[in-house]
Length: 147
Image (cartoon, rainbow, N blue to C red; front, side, top):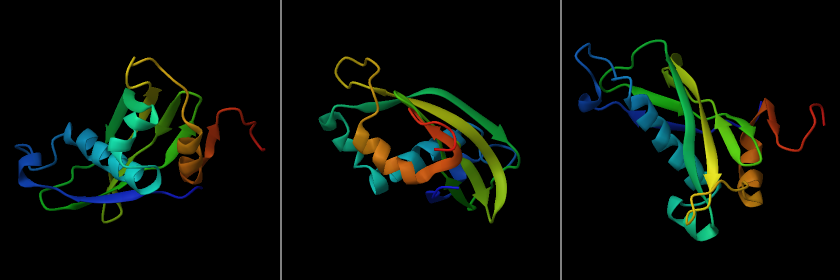
């Protein structure tokens, strides 16, 4: 298993629904905050991405809800990188409260040129920065299992 980046968030009252749990749509907001912090910690500040000639968009997102986080809970968003492809990457976030799994999922991102919005290759510097966070079962593009 590679390194796992985690970011902690506190659930605010406004993020809870009438059942007293985090409204389902907020988990993707939590994910976005954690991805931004992962990027800031290991790749670059988000404002540096366009100047470096790339940006990142969500192509697909899936969240599976298991238990509801509640107001004032501390949610640890773990961000294992499942795959580093040629033009995309997959992250499998896990949302935990005191070690209990609240939700998990999979988010596929595609790298784009910020001007044309066309798909582009993942920059080598990004691949190198994220490689230590790649799950053991994940595979970087151009590699063969077992190598």
